[in-house]
Amino acid sequence: MTYSWKTIIRHGLPLLMFCLLIEIYAGGILQQNQTFLVKQLPVFLVSIPVINGVGGNIGSILGARLASGLHVGSIRLDPRDKQMHENVFTSILLGILTYGILAIIIYYIGTITGTTKGIELISYLTIFIGTGVFLICILSFVSVFSAFISYKRGIDPDDVVAPIVTTFGDTIGIMLLFFFLGGIMI
Image (cartoon, rainbow, N blue to C red):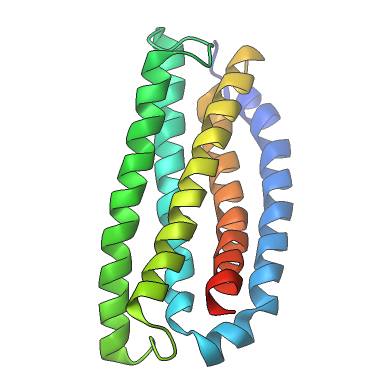
């Protein structure tokens, strides 16, 4: 695989434009529900960037590990590859632990600042951790799929996986949060 700025631009620019459109859509979803969050559940305004950031970071790390493994030959283009499964499992476990710790910290800081009004600890933990775990599982699949497809097509996965994972993470993270909010709060 050769590296040149022209190849990176040719592969990356259309993808980044597509990702930009998806991010605008995700921002619209958030804007439509902003009043509800500000008035009813302000602690989730702090939670959204954390949920999306952690999901995007872990998904991007997984993608980078898969790309490196594909480049050096330690991971094969095979859904049954043991090394790939270990990387996905580790990412999901890291996500569960990270979301659990952050949920507790954010809730108690929110209690001190008064932003947790209207939501109990167990409900908040269920929504935050549930959103995060589902997000990590989805992003793990997206990361594996995009790494394998791009590598198979001769495109460097390092140029493709991170933008796809972070874009899907932001969009799906917001949708999952409102899904869990609707299910828990009703």
